[in-house]
Each structure stands twice: as C-alpha cells, then as structure tokens.
Length: 590
Image (cartoon, rainbow, N blue to C red; front, side, top):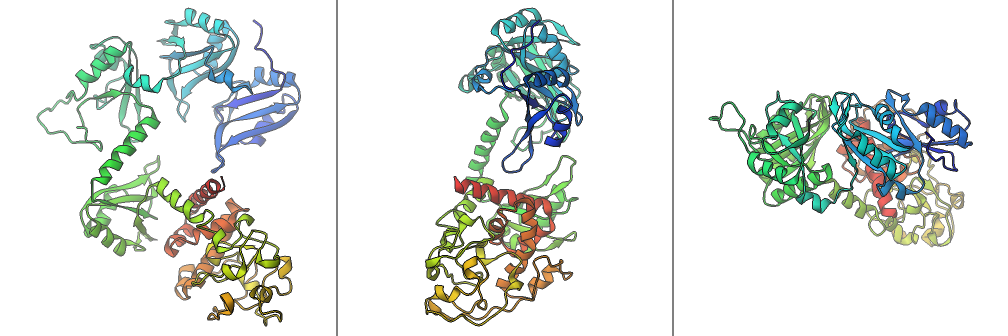
C-alpha cells in the first residue's frame, strides 16, 4: 500500500511527550536518523512547562520520512511518542473529514496496536488512544485518515469486530453541538452505586431501561468510584435519569443518609447527564457564588501550614474564635497538605478575631499567614489595576518601560530612558520612597532597588542652578550612574526631609548575612525594613525572571512584610507569586 502523501517540507509533529523531555533529548534521538535543522518543545508562555508536544525539522524530506517510519511510537522517558507530518493548514485538522471515533477499546490496546489495526484501510494522518497521565487507557480513541473513503471502509469492516477482549464500536467522528447536546444526550454520569460493581454489572443494571452501548468505571485521588454509562438513544438516557436518580441502593434503608458537599444523600444513586469539565466548573462556580451572596459567612485564606495539617486539625485551630462553617487544607496527590487552606466563619466578627489572633502565630514551627480570601480572578484584576499605567509604575515616574531594575540614561527635562515624568512631580511623600523616584531609573515599586544601596557614598551637593533636576545631575548621572547626594535630604521643590539611617556598606555579591532576617527587620524602621527584604528578594526573583526581576520585586514589596518573609522561606510559593506577577505584567502590556 502506498505511504501517505509526503509534504514538501521536512517537519514532524511529536506528541504524547513526557513533561521532562527537552530539546536536547529529542535532538540526540532524531539526529541519529539524519541531520536535524531545528527542534522545539512547545511550552506554556507563563510557567514554561512542557505542553507535551513539539516539532522536529529535518534538512531533508527523506530523513523526516525515515524518522516517521522508524521512531513512531518509540519510548522516550517511559512514554510512547506519537509522530505525524506537521500540518501547516489547520483546516485539515479541524474539518473532521476522514476522522473516526473508536469506543469500547480493550485497556491493553495502545496507540501502535490501534494504528496497526486501522492502517490496513488507508493512509493515517493521526492515531491516538485517549489515556490519563499514567498512560492508562480511557477505552476510546481516534483515527484520522487522509481520505473519507478510507474512513468509510474502516467503519464498514471494523464496526462490531472484536479487538483484543472487547467488541469495538466504530463510527464517524462528529463535532459536538453544545446546545443540542444538552437536550439530545446519551452519556450519563453515575455515582454512589455499590463499590463492588464493575463495568459488566453496570451494563446489566442499566440495561433494564434500554440498550447500553458502553460503561466505564473511574476513580478519583481519594479512591471514590464513579462511572459513565452510554445509552443507544436519547429517550432511554432521559428515562434512566427520571427513574433511577435518587434510587436508594443501601442495605440499611432505615438509617438517615449523610449529604455530600453538594447536598446529595450518600448511598442514593446519582444519575445525571455527563458534563465536560469546563461546563461542570462553570456550574459550580455559579452555584457557590449565589450561595456566597446569600450568606454572611467570611472565608479566610491560611498559608504556611505544616505538611501534616489536615481538615480536622485546621478546624481545631480556628474553632476557639467562633463557629467554623468549613475548613479545608488543600492537599497534593499524596495526601500531604500543600501549605495552604481555607477556613469559613459563620460571622464576620469571628473571622476578624481569628485574623487578629492567628496572623503570624507560630504553629508547628511556622508563622501562619491569615487573611481574607479572594477569588483568583479578583486578585489578578486588583493587581492589574494597581500596576497598569495610571495606577502603578508610570505615575510614580519609575520608568516602567525600562522593565524594572535597570538604570536608564538621564536626559534633559528629567525624562529617563523609561519615560519618567518631570522630576519635580515624581517626588512622592511617604516613607517608602527612599530613592525619591530618580529620573531614568526603572526602580521597583516603593523606591526599592537592587542590592546596591551600600555602594552610594554620601558626598556634598553639586553646585549648579537651583533647579532640582540640575542639582541631581552630578558627575556620572548622565551615564546612568548613581546620584551623588545623601539619601533623603531633598524633597520636592527643595523641601527638606529627615535623613535616612545610613546602611552598612555592601557589595553587590556580598554573602548572606548570618543574622536572622526577622530579627534585623524588627530592629529598624519601616522604610529600611522594605529595603532589607528587597535585597533578599531580588536575587531569588532574578533566578526565574532576570529581565523583569526589578519590576516583579517592586510589585511584591507592596505586600505585607509578614507575607514577604513567608515567600523567602518557601521557594514554591515564591515561584507562584512570580508567575502571577508575570501574568499581570503581560496582560497590562496587551
């Protein structure tokens, strides 16, 4: 049988990659077949984590063809990779022509076995068995043929045929009409059935209503089972929902059932139309938002929890302050606390008392952060408003265009490289403005800068015109150097300010001070506290975002000092804040 039509370009798509696979690994594998021009593993623009696929470009089409023949479904880092020609035209993938859906697959059927079975009928563009992160099959897959004729032949020959231990169903793939799907559904989501039921028992039980084409048993991280049951027609599926939802399958029917988080009684069969994850999340979000509006409960966010803390321990910590509606310590897949959680109080008075008493209280060797919880979207919008032009860096004259942390070249009129405004208007009152918004210096919010404060040598004021800008333009200032005036002496329009406490001389690469940072902060005033934290925070942030480290550090320094200390102790939490700040900066620049 002739092979698939070879494109004029030598580019291959590589799918189903392990998250740890890098360009170097792929180069070593594919370069053994023929000279590789370039390799790219596609990554998330914010987190830089692998998206599980990439592209390999060869110099020669013949080398790409040989790689497709020899390396397709080979194992890389424990996963079978899937190769296909890179389709530059997205319409070929999206129109669905020649694409078929295969259901009720044997769990042992993988991508290669499916490909070998269906390649008898024509050239295959893509072949995939749906599976979870561990590689366990979901029991269905897709085969995309180059022509519709080959797809029809495969359906005629293989529909109803036994492949492995199961009889498969093969049909043309049809795009879902979301509105029509809500009315004309056949797939049902089922839970709270007896835990010893398998797929065969489920099919037998639900066949009382009508013909069932497939049933699949699944489980979550906590070991709770649920299932999907697919009927042959919509009427039987709707009848099943009407007749079997809330059916009591418990042995002891006299005992009152306990409601679950959604209010459904445990032990009573739950049968509803199967929803997509996105649809289910939107419904739950809407439901909880309505419940929150009709309630006086106050939700608190608790951070820096010990890994051993569970829901019961978290509730016990906060119950002395008032009635706790719910307490949840967020856990990872292994069951350990991820370091944060949520506590909901029935009244605002109890929540206020809890924040007052528990914030910074040491529990199991860690100082807790306790504050009012807010939705992720609301927090990002608040940060976006704070740091977009008109709210954040630009109106402080810190040269937001400089990207933060860089020293621009001073220009006439007090405008630096970052586009700072007139110097006389840049001066800000308040203790945080330690550097007084120097022109051309893209410094972090709050006047904090890189750990170079100790490099400033106090000198006498330079002679010159009385204009404040000219007074600042001492030797080296025109080249982006540091000003030659003592910190804090001149305010806007010549107003005097009390001098700052002189900091000890520091080198840019000075070793970490052995003294505990919390002790240092407690012994100095508010502005110097921010400086000390900034000097510790900046090198940590620069590891993840070296170009935007100054700007992101400035954004973080707007946070409470206690929360900043927690970030310095926890690298995962710091990384999360860096990613969040980067998203805010990217959205503000659009």
